[in-house]
Image (cartoon, rainbow, N blue to C red; front, top):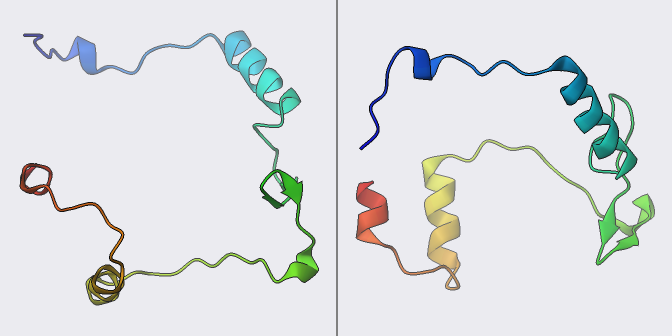
Length: 86
């Protein structure tokens, strides 16, 4: 068993040059974009034009709305009581 001490809870120190290199490689690989750099929308690896009707939406999901969705979705995995208890 590992004990938790105050020193083990301190944030790790990172090398700024290492972070810059990781960021540069991620941008070069297309995994990271800067502010204002929109990501292309893709479906099955192909670009999707904005005219296709594909859109996204942020919404607040209330417990009532979640229950409604769950009641109408029969493809969910069975509820695990152990996971619920955790």
